[in-house]
Image 1 (cartoon, rainbow, N blue to C red):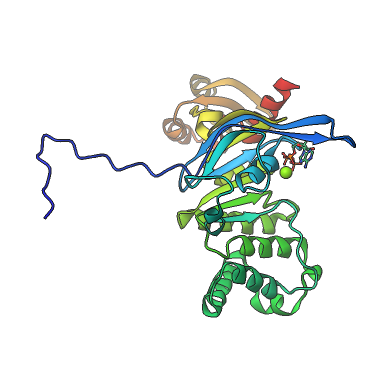
Image 2 (image 1 turned 30 degrees about the horizontal axis):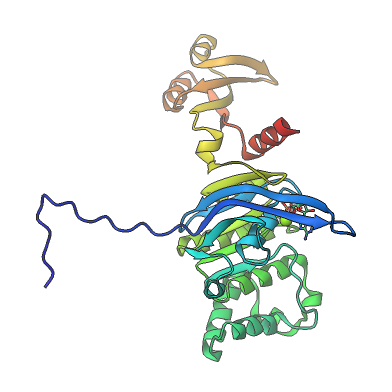
Length: 322
Ligand SMILES: Nc1ncnc2c1ncn2[C@@H]1O[C@H](COP(=O)(O)OP(=O)(O)OP(=O)(O)O)[C@@H](O)[C@H]1O
Ligand SMILES: [Mg+2]
């Protein structure tokens, strides 16, 4: 029989779920050149944490070290120093392979396999029964938006870039992983393809998965990530939620027409007139301003949060260093 605690005794706190990814001072130096006597440091003293259920976006210009970090976390590349855990296990731990999914940056597939054969092959590696394979593959094709009939006959070498990326995503998810690492999942995709990948990521998040992805497409990152980190030349410049990095300023850029000049001047700073519209900055929530404008017969044609976009923030951070 379990005795309940007296009311004056604090209930023991639930142990917090371990971080999905935790790195501590990870550094990777490659030896290069014919005699291996030159060194390139791709990652320097990188410490970051990703919590369960988070969608985490790792950003950075070409050569920043994003793929290197991902490869270290997947146990493909050994760090020169520092340590890391994934799902509470040291990186490289064999038991992790069943719990993580990975879409590489430039996935190379067997040209002469069909999409279905590739997925069955991967499912077999994870030991799924034939019935599980059938069910899981059908669900994944539906999720990534591929037609089962179309990929059943065609060899992979005849797939478009978008189709290959979707097959790659389905392959990365075949073992129903707890955490998914995606290296540039939107690269080379047209707007519809990017939209589809975004949808898949959001669907995974809704199912409680943790997603760690590298991307250059900042607008996509801005739409779907809970937190982002910015890497440049191996250095981690910052990590945080978009609000933490971009600010939560409640200022708006407003443009409109009509209304009363005196009242507009009362509400808006930096008021200007151009192409038949007025433009200005509104500080604070817009509701009162909008109703007062409506009362004067004026109309707003644009209302935009005045904080910088992720792209502006990214460029500012990178330009400061170069
Ligand atoms: N196997 C390797 N041997 C030597 N240098 C390497 C190796 N892999 C990566 N590098 C170097 O490490 C640095 C970081 O590379 P990495 O691929 O991690 O960057 P990235 O941020 O993923 O770039 P991209 O956006 O172009 O994919 C680069 O200077 C790269 O040339
Ligand atoms: Mg890369």
